[in-house]
Structures are given as structure tokens and as C-alpha cells.
Image 1 (spheres, rainbow, N blue to C red):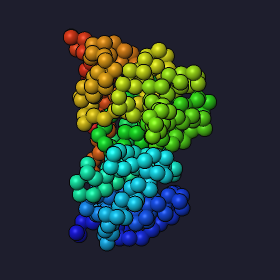
Image 2: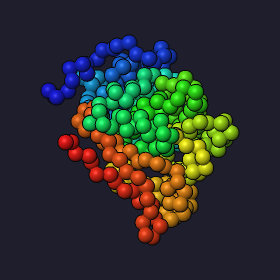
Image 3: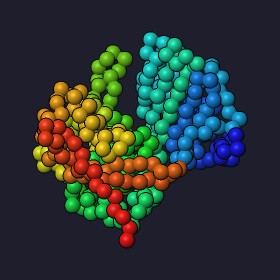
Image 4: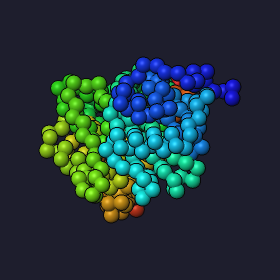
Length: 330
């Protein structure tokens, strides 16, 4: 496989994971510890793939047995305070050091244990490190939006860098401001002197103790945030955060999954439906909540292209997005 980067042979580099976590990772320890890796995938067939920003490639010379894979999967989930077995074969957990682990065991995974590891490094890149197309025009506009306390809705597909962009933008908030960050799994690490980071909690084995994003939104409003930042809206919590944005908590933002800026309205509608709201009902709140829609497309290995839009309503009162025409160079 000549297109596989040469460094994907078994070796290690100094990383950020703890010795306990690295030991539990077993044969995956070296690749997870490499600071260039953002994702590691252990497939049911025992092949390990890694992603460093330009797609997933198999690791040369590394094949994990089914017994090893099962031990790694169970051990990582237990390290995150949860339990996985045949009765509960799909589990995710958050480990220290910015590791998020998702495990699928047989019989749901037909070939063997499937382990997906997302690695959030402690360093959050700045806007000038994101390789944004037309950066000389786009970056000043983004910073102006933050300084003007515009509330941002950032969309993009998986791995596009939408959460990274949100973090880089919020780092430009004034140093005297209090930023409250809410996430399902803590990933955002803002380069800012006053950050409060809150994370959801899953129910324990008895089914109690769950803390949802919706509850975190409500609790955060009692913490006097100057900017409220929701890492990603995936469910009915979109209505809670929109209500917060709509009632005066300006200058923050959130992200949603969407393949194009023109698809953002459909995505918001589907999330609002989970809270029992129609498009017309949700549109009345969303229009006053978000000032700017930013869509992130990944172009090539690491380059990002941004497109812009604004929320509006159709004649039927449904949510829609007016997409800005790309600016042409003179």
C-alpha cells in the first residue's frame, strides 16, 4: 500500500495519555499516544486504522487478535466508569486525557469487537492555524462577528472541524468575559482566561444519575455566563439553547451536523421535532437566536472552506437559510 504514510509503522512518540490508560490500550497504546493522531479505529477483523487529518489509513504491521480486542474494549469502558457486555453491547465512555471511546461487541458487531477512539489534544489551534481558504478576507470577518457579539451557528459534516472552529472563535472573546461551555463529552479547550466547562453524565448501571445537555443549559443560566457555548446540538436541547440565545445571552454559539449550509434548516427542524415543535413554531425562536450561519467544508487533507448564510422564514413560516454568494476576487 504505497499511499500509506511511512510513519504508520509501529512506534511511539511522547503523547498526553496517562500510563494507566496507555497500559489498558494494550496494542493500541503507541498509536493513540502519537500526537498527530486524532482518531483510532480497531475493526472487528483486527486491523487498526488511524486518522491524522487526511483520512483513515491502516497501521502497518499491527493486527489485534479477537481476545486482545475484547480485553481492550472492556477495559477501556470500565476505565471510563461504565460496563459493556453482550446484554449491553453498545457503550461509549469518556476517559481522562481527552479520550472518547465507543465500543460495539458481538453479536451486534458481526466480525468482532469494534472500537472507535476520538483523541482531543490539549492544544486548541488558533484561527491562523486552521488553513482556511481566503483567510485574509474570512478571518477578519469571523473575528468581527465575535467582537460584535453575534451568536453563531456552525455546521459541517463529521470531522470537518466545526467544533475546532467554534473553539478558535470563542478564544477571541474579551478576557473579562465569562465563557460557559456545555458538551456531551468535553472536547473544547478554549484559549481564554475564564472558562467554565460542564459535561453531561450518563446514567449509572442502576439507571440513575443522568445529567442531560438540556439540564446543563438550564443550570448554566444561573452561572451568569457572558457567552454560552454548546459544543454540539444533537437533540431536543436545541430548543433550550435557542431560548437562552433568544432571551439575551448573546455572543456564544453551537454546532450542528449538516452537509451544506442550505441543509442547516432541515437539520434544525429535525432536532426541534424531537422536542415536539413544528418548523413554524421553532422558526419564531431560531430567527432571533442566531445572527450568522457558518458552514465548514473540508477540502483536501487539512484545508477548510467556509460559506456563510443567515436564517430566515419561508412564506409558510418554515425555517430556511439564505446562502451568501461567494465573494469574487478582483
